[in-house]
Image (cartoon, rainbow, N blue to C red; front, top):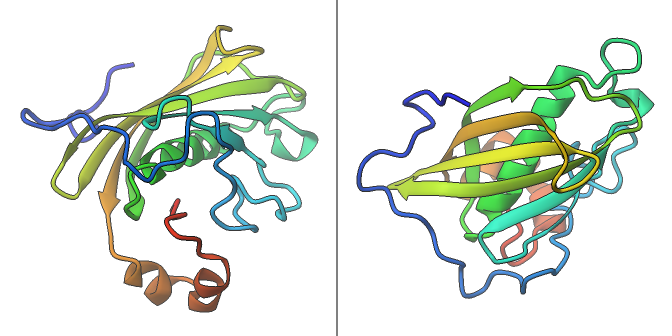
Length: 184
């Protein structure tokens, strides 16, 4: 994947270390919001990503492409695959316990993904500089070592929690917000 300069960490960017309050390795991360399209367990046609972190800085998740996720007959819609990349990347930045939003997402499609396929997703942070976080992800077909079907690089921007209250549903944030479960 050739990344743009927007998603490439600048000189001097630091690679983050696991946050002391991050979940223990292997602990399920859970949805940040029950009706989130990416990770919510109450979204009827969502991706329903189930994620863990093996080391406090990387996130792994699985996504099985369903009938509701197809574009061309029998194949995953490219936008749905991009959403899966955005979600797993958002989960990885969530480990650092600061609220971020997607500033840019670049997605490369390397192989078709048939309906019924389980994609094994992995995301990690390549550097942080000021309010900016630079991240990457990949989706592999069939197993964590299977062929790469999709790759992504992203720039996420740190925001305050007031961003979500101002632009979203403030009461839902109050009702479902957990200590640091912010995964915009």
